[in-house]
Every structure is written in C-alpha cells, then in structure tokens.
Length: 469
Image 1 (cartoon, rainbow, N blue to C red):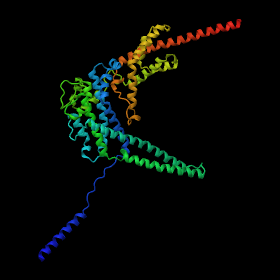
Image 2 (image 1 turned 120 degrees about the vertical axis):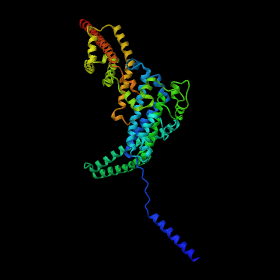
Image 3 (image 1 turned 45 degrees about the horizontal axis):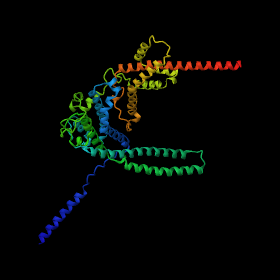
Image 4 (image 1 turned 90 degrees about the vertical axis):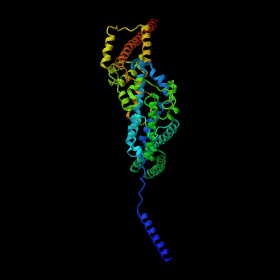
C-alpha cells in the first residue's frame, strides 16, 4: 500500500514537471494579416475595371457588338468588312484588358500569406492555356453578380474615403495657417482655431469610420481573393463568348446566356457550351485554340501597316475630322484664320491630294444647286466617318493617365475607332470633305458679300431719294 502511494506521488510529480515545461515553451504567434492601407485606392481602380469588363460582356452588350458595332458603315468602309477579323479584334482587346488587370494584381499577390494567391501568376497561366481551374476560382453567374455587388460597395466607400481624406488634409492645412496668422485679432484668431479643431476632430472620426468599412482595412488575402476570382470568371466569359478553348465548368455557360442570343448552335454540348459562341475560324487560328491566348491576342492588337494606328495618326485625324465637322455645320462662321489653322493641321499627303483636286477649279462659287449637292455629300461622309472620330477621342480620353483608375463611361472598342482604319481610304474621305468645305465656304462668303452689296445699294438709293426730296 505504501509502495502504491509512493508510485502515485512520483507519477504526479513527473506529470506536473512536464506540464510546467510545456507551458514555459513560447507558443508561435499567428502572423497578423497586413491590411492594404493606401493601396486601397489603386485596388478600387482595378475593381472598377473588372466590373466594367464584366458588364461589357453582358448579353445586351454582346448582342450590340454582333449586330451594331461591327456593322457600322464607317467600320465596314475603312476598317474591314471581314466579320471574323472584327470579332477577333474585339476579343483581342478584351483579352488585353484582362491581361493588364492581372499584371497589376500580380504585383500585389507577393504581400499575401495564402500560398495559392502568391502563386496567382502560374495558376492564371495554366488556366489561360488549358482551362484547368484547380482551386475553383471561376464563379457562376449568380456568384459573380453577388461578388460584383460586394466590390461595388467597397469601391463606393473607398471613393468616399478618398474625398474625406482630401477634406481632412484641407482642414489640417487651414488650422496650421490659422495658428501662424498674425493679422487676425487675438479673440478672432482663437475662435477660428477652436472651430477648426472641432471640425478636425469630427473629420478624423469620419475618416476612421470609412477606413474600417472600406478596402483600407481589408487584408491583402481578402482583396486579392476577390480580384483573382473575378479575373478567372471574366477570362472564362471571354473565351466562352468568342468560342476559344475547351474544358470550362458547365455551370458558367448555364448562367451566362449571351452566346445563345447571338449565335445558337445546332448541337449544343453541355460539357463545354450550352450554346454557340461568337465563333470564327480566323479567331480560332490566331488564338491557337487557347494556347498562349493572352500573348497572341496582345500581338493581334498591333495595327498592320497601312493603317492610321501604324502611322500614329489616328488621334490627329480624329481631331481633324471633328474640326471639319464643326466648320461644315456652320461654314458662314468660319473666318480666314480658322481656315488657315485647319490647313496647318493637314499632313503632306492630304495637302498634295487637295492641291491636285483643286487644280483648275475656278474662284467663283455662286451655284446654289452645286452648294446644296456638296452639303448633302458632306453630310453622307460625316454620317459614317464622324462616329469613328468621336469614338477615337472617347477611347483615348478614357485611357489617359488622369483617368486610369476611374470607371470607363462607354463600351467603345478599338475596332470602332480610326486606329485600324485604312490610311489611304481615310485620307481620300478627308480630301473629299476639304474640297466640299472649300466650295460651300466660298459660296457662303460670296452670298454674304452679295447681300451686303445689295443692302448698301438699297441704302444708297434711299439716301439719294431723301436728299432729292
């Protein structure tokens, strides 16, 4: 009995010593996930681009692309009348946009703690080339819509935070200036400082509140997870709509029906597509059925020789056409200086063509029938050329440095601009417009001069009659 009691005491002593030894060993601290902080504003810009890309791939916009955008008269006249080529350009631009967003996201992934997110580049490359989605990042239509609402809410609050932080900075600056001001009376100065300090207190509370609710206080893992899933889903949607690659989750086609609206297939395969995509043989050849999809589409956006984009003239010609459009609408308001400025905008090739067209043309422009014919002809040319010029300006302005992080306001694609327009055909149309503008401008001046001359003659007759009476 005594032996058993002694053994129990020894066992208890050993157990207690082991417990104390374990408790003395420091437990490894869990790594605290870092928040995105000031990068919230850049991330909000990426979210806005993803939302815009997703919306541009909606049923309505895909139908508009198929039935309107690639069927524009101007596109068919000076860009291309090959539907496969135009669809290829649309696909290439959307793929390039998602590539640029993914590149920006990859710069943030190194700050994540999740190994999968750190490996975003490799997983995206694998998905792009083979369609393999090892982590199930492609969302269904309903899941994507819910994710978009969440991102939109974060974006709204983050934009508000930016404005409130600017206001906070302005209040702090005003307070410093008030404290250093020596012109105000002591009592007035003290009251102003008290008011500003009170305003500063409430503004700081507002900023703190918005930081807690916005992207500012979200972890890199949380934010990148949302962005990665959106990138995969948008890319899958692009491939689905344009009929590139295979092996995508069956849930995606079932929840996205635009391709059915655009081009239904005769024998749908539920394992790949439930409906026919915007399919074209040339597009499939150029994208090699999904292999090097992003890289091949990036190359496809390089304008071929003989286009305005290759000559770096697309934006200049767009501005030129818009200036001419204003002059054609109100030729009577065009002065000599404005006419000279327009001529100064012309490149050598158009000047040479214009001189050749006007060679031997008389200086008189008094035929109202001919002036009417020219107005009708100019109206027809502007009807198809002007939309491309305005689209070029919109496309460029949305991609300017100042607008990079803002939500694009339009769904303008490069194929709807002058970027891929044939240089010779565009210059021929511009030259024709210049010849017509020259005639109606001189016609308006001659009619105005004639009216003034007749008016002066009438005034002279009336004056003579008054003098004779």
